[in-house]
Amino acid sequence: HPAINAFPSRQFYKNRVSTCPIIAENRLSQPPPLLQGLLSPELPILFLAVPNGQEQRGDHDSATASYFNLAEVDAVSAAVQALLAAGATPQDIGIVTPYAAQARAITQNL
Picture 1: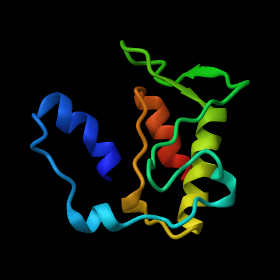
Picture 2 (picture 1 turned 180 degrees about the horizontal axis):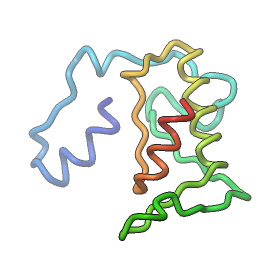
Picture 3 (picture 1 turned 180 degrees about the vertical axis):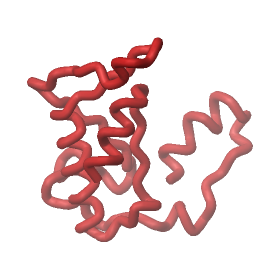
């Protein structure tokens, strides 16, 4: 999506990166009801604030700590399911998390 592409193109590639026209035109006309007011077709980026979550250490045997938060996993899963029900495909959806354990928990939950 052009809105997602704009920052890295400008900051790192001197505006030389562009969005594929087919991708640029592929949009949901309306956000699903669960995401009304949170997601816009013009800026399809969603940051979820999840209160009352509890971080848990996911890799007890690892030398590097990785954490997950089940409340966040559930919120992400609900958002993904709502997008899929509204006509998005799995290839249309990207999820970014800095924690490997969180990525695994989200993948398992979906």
